[in-house]
Image 1 (cartoon, rainbow, N blue to C red):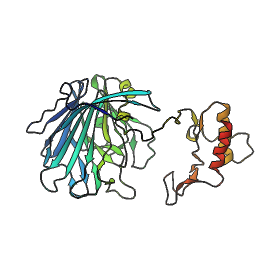
Image 2: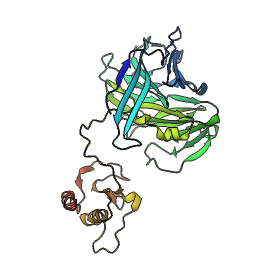
Image 3: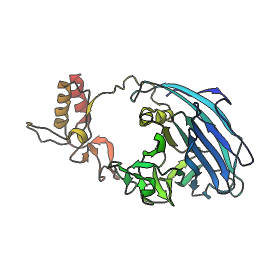
Image 4: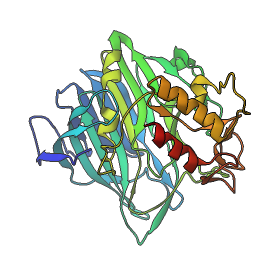
Length: 378
């Protein structure tokens, strides 16, 4: 992704920022349909999202908590905001389109505690024609070199009791696979994990999908209904339940994304998640060629009429390589056989164990020999 171009420092035709005694800030999408309002009250930061004048998210909480100092919620002040209109053109290697044009209006504001530790966060908001997103930026401060985040309980106070399409999960370590449920928001049981993305259908044909983007060095986000309101819940680090993120400063959260449109197709067509992601770190991508592939969880491990024992071995994989060559399939994927990874692992259910080593293939699978054999067919 190319670097974003900062066209104007302040573009009043597209962005309105009303700074009052209540610390009230507003950012509007370029087409003026989506409105994100941010302010503070006695309990911390609150926000509201409207689409074409209809409130979809009524006043909701922004709530992040740290092991040092607890929740960042009380006695907060919004400092002078920075407002910019951003435009970007970039290419996608794979996706819905090869070339993407992105435009949004951005708010960046520093938030400070007035007492106590006087911690500081920066809040970044970007509003596009097809959605809005926010994230936390945690700068160096108070001699802190690192930070432990204990949760991020942002609320999403959805109005109009929308119809929800969601995947309920029993814990934070599932495969993210299952049957989706369709029900009204008020029918969702309290404190049940909802995987992302989750889709919400409002009256008058308005749709919202809540998800995240640019997830790097951070716990994954889920939704739960707590005290009657949806809120985020972050997956904890392994083998404990308190700390969700350990990070060196400066650090940032993923984007919390609300994709919005008056057609379901708008959400399908949207490139909002790649717009919010970091630029590709691979400079030369010419070698990346999308194409069809075999994959054992799709096609199974089928090896009829063979003289060798199928398994995680050279012979089984060459059987599929030859099949691909005969049928103009660009790729064969080496994944697993018999529910065991192709590499050395003492984990369970594809979770890494203490001696898991993806750099070493299991006995009987010579990866160098396999790659050399493939080259002879190309």
